[in-house]
Length: 83
Image 1 (cartoon, rainbow, N blue to C red):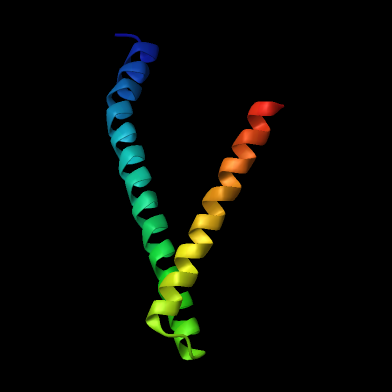
Image 2 (image 1 turned 180 degrees about the vertical axis):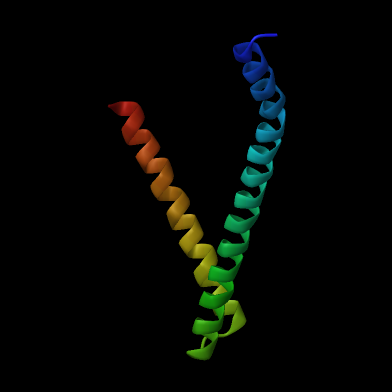
């Protein structure tokens, strides 16, 4: 086996391990994003609660903001389709 073939063989053996590591990193990134979102919501709830809002008011505020956000996305999608 030539040096090139040996080097190529070694690289080919590393590829599956690298792909597995990439997939693990992607999964970890998604988990961290979800945790960050949860912590942001919890921090906002605590802030609002500390400023006198009830749990029901906080839920209504968070629900309304997510509905508004979704409506903005739909409107942007419609604009993109029209252009």
